[in-house]
Amino acid sequence: MKESQHLVQKVFLKTFNEEPLLVRSPGRVNLIGEHTDYNMGYVLPAAINKAAYMAMSKRNDDTIFIVAADLDESYTTTVSNCNYSDKGWPNYIIGIVDQLHKAGFQINGFNAVVSGDVPLGAGMSSSAALECATIFSINEIFHLGLERMQMVKMAQKAENEFVGVNCGIMDQFASMFGKKGHVIRLDCRSLAYEYVPFDLKGTKIVLFDSMVKHSLSSSEYNVRTSQCGEGVSIIQQKYPQVKTLRDATIEMVEECLAEESNDIYHRCKYVVEENNRLLAACEDLNAGKIEDFGQKMYETHQGLSELYEVSCTELDFIASCCRKESGILGARMMGGGFGGCVISLVKEDELENIVKRIKEAYWNKMNIGMNVYITQIEDGTHILK
Ligand code: GLA
Image (cartoon, rainbow, N blue to C red; front, side):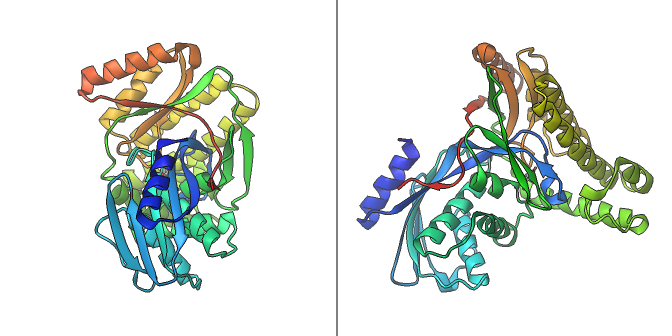
């Protein structure tokens, strides 16, 4: 049994002296398709073997009593009066209650204990994991009858409206819909999705954690979402059919934006290129052309670094170390940016030496001890007990 699972069970029993519902909701990786989700394009994520664990039971009154076992902190509020908390972590839980309230669901209070092993601020979506664990648990104990996709949308809205990050749907979707051994190709506009077996024999998905916490990410993230919106409104003046960057072509971007501010032009050029790149990368995957797939990951990194400008010195350095390794098929920064991890595809028989070399190089250059996660693709949100 995972340590975090054991911890939530133990703390729950000790605090509330009853048996809870126990839910696991994973973090995610994304192979390619970054900053495309809120532009209504495609993404290719998978749920991983790192997760949030939540133990929950219902109460007969209005009180919400939650414990963060890893922090040894608790927080109390009520269903009828759940305001933003300066503590930070309760907002991912309270934000869900707020969404349910807005959607007209009547629920009682609850007791909950949460723990997890998704590293915080490493770009592996610990927040989406917590939001999905919360809505899944509440749905279960109060028999709300919500379907997974409804829960995904509400969890995303909780992040948008309560936490204040205008994120797309990818993280909450991947946490909820993950499937062992598969990546998911999601069309973020129609929400149609397809499970693609990810069976690269002898290859592992390895995350090199820069250990840089993405403190800029929420403010700069929101700047990127509005820059994309500005780009769309300029393109629309000539091409009214373009509703999002998903509808734009490279030619349109060149024609309408090349004369605009560099920022708007570069951001939009990256998004349109990345969307095309993902579609081509999926064909590589189907055809077993894994080297070509890997090359596209490097191209994504370059676009994120130079055009979208969401990378940082540390991530660029790790990506450049990966490029020098013949045992690495592809690598790029992952997630929102400004810190977090580089995702890479590493040949298993060279794994140990490669990890050693990259850790060493990172230490020598940046004086930072790096964490490395060798991931497995696991199922999405589910009940453990
Ligand atoms: C964060 C957001 C996602 C997505 C990625 C970038 O993880 O939560 O919605 O936009 O950044 O691809």
